Length: 417
Image 1: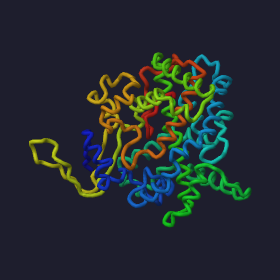
Image 2 (image 1 turned 60 degrees about the vertical axis):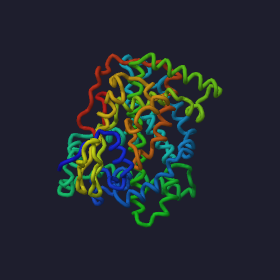
Image 3 (image 1 turned 180 degrees about the horizontal axis):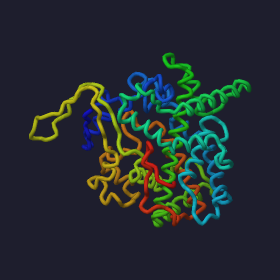
C-alpha cells in the first residue's frame, strides 16, 4: 500500500509527538492469537492496550529504579574485566569478538537485575540465556523470511500462521518465568528486581491475561535489554579502536572520575562521564540500530502546507503507513557536517542545543520513546568505562574494513561480530 516518507524534522516532530493522537501506533501488525507474548510488549502494542502497558511498564524504568541496579552492574563489570584478563580469548592474536562480549555482559546484567538469577554467560558457553540471545541475534533463513513477511506483507501473517516470537522461545520464556516464580513461592521471598516490580504492578491490571503479561514483559526485558545494548557496546568499542585520540580522551575522563571517587566505579561517577556519553550518542548516530521508524495514521490526517506561498496540503486516510528514515536523518550534512566522520563533540551540550531535537532518533522520540533508554545508557557506560579503565584497545586485523552487515536480521548487525 502507498506510504508517506517524511524527512522534514518539524513534520517528524508532529508525527512522533505533536499530533501523536493521529499516529499513536507502530506499523507492525501482530496477531494476538499467534503472538500472545509480543503483543504484551509496548513496542508492538496498539491503541488502548499500548496505553495500559505503557503505564504499567514506565515505573519499572524510572531513574531511581535504574540506579538501584548499580551494585549488580558493578559486579558484572568486575566479571567482565576478569574475563578479559584471564578468559579464553585473553591472549588470542585474533582479538575478541565484541558483539559476543556485549551479549555476555548485558545478558548477565539483565538476568540479575531482571530476575535475580545468575546468567553465567562468562563462565559457560552452555548458559541458557546466552543461547537464547544467540538465537535472537542470529536468526535462521526461515525465521528471517518470517520477519520479512510480518514487516512487509502483514496480511499474509494470519493466513500462514506466522509468529513474531518463535514457539520454542515462547515456551522457554514461560518455563523460565514459572520456575523463578515457583522458587520464590516455595521460599516465601520477594526480590528487588524488575520481575518483582512487574508482579506488584500487574495486580492492578484487570484487562490483561496475567500469564501472558508477565511472560511477555520478561521476554521484552531480556530481548530489548540485551540486543540493542550489546550492539552499542560492540559498535562503541569498534569506533574507539579506530579513533585512538578519542579513546585516549575518554580514558583521561574516566581516570579523572575514578580518582575523584576513590578509584572505584560509582553511580555518581558514571553520571559525570559526559564525554563517554557523547561517544555513545555519536555511535548511535553513525550505527543506527534500525534504518527507519514506521508509524501508521490512526485517523484521517491533513499535513500543514509545506511552502509559504502555497495553500496546498497533503491529506491521507486512516491506515496510511508513515516512514521516518532514521539513518538518512543521522547522515544528513544539514544536521551533521561531514556525517561520515565519527565526532563525539556533535553531542556536546552546546551543539545539541543548536540542533533540531528530532535530528537524533537513536531512541525514538515522543510518547513512544524507548522506555529502557536510561537503563541501556547506564549499563553500557559502565561496561565501556570498565574496559577503558583497564585496557587500551585496537582493531583486530580480522575486522572487516569497512564493516559488512548481515542481510537477514531485524536490526543492523555486523558480520563476524
